[in-house]
Length: 222
Figure 1 (cartoon, rainbow, N blue to C red):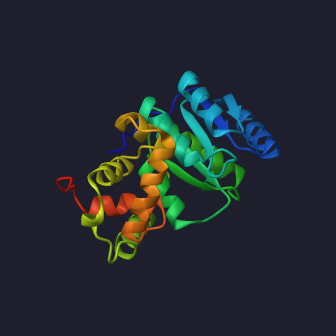
Figure 2: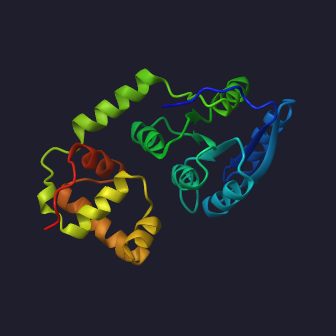
């Protein structure tokens, strides 16, 4: 459950976007506000994850698509270490699956880059106070659509015990690297398992696999 609290008097923001011009524009927009400060910025996912964990800002604005990953992965990784950070996913694409992935990763908001500047400022203040900017009706619609449409014909019993364990960890929001650490496997080995698992289930993405896992509770490994 989202906890509402008073927004901090001074809101510290970390900014992740691989386009320097976009970062500069957002930084100038936010720093024109007396209660908002940009405490760090990056154009790469790995660098941003380290920076956000170290700086622990109130809000992280994360570009959904990056050269070395995605803001959704950064959101998941950061919140597993610093749960108090509020994440806003910034994207150029109005995509239901990406929205679902953002929800699963724990994001507090999902923002199109076409957003008006005043609205972005408002959203930063909203999530800093512990609220979500995700419309509950839209969220429910997206989740329902993904649940209804994406797992027909898939058979969990086709999976090996190791593939089932990996599926369960994907549903918990872990990245391939984190799954590898959990199961003492190389990241490349995990990727191979994920590819095999998706093929057996007739699925095409980790998001669909996460939904499938929710619909099909764990069974004893074969």
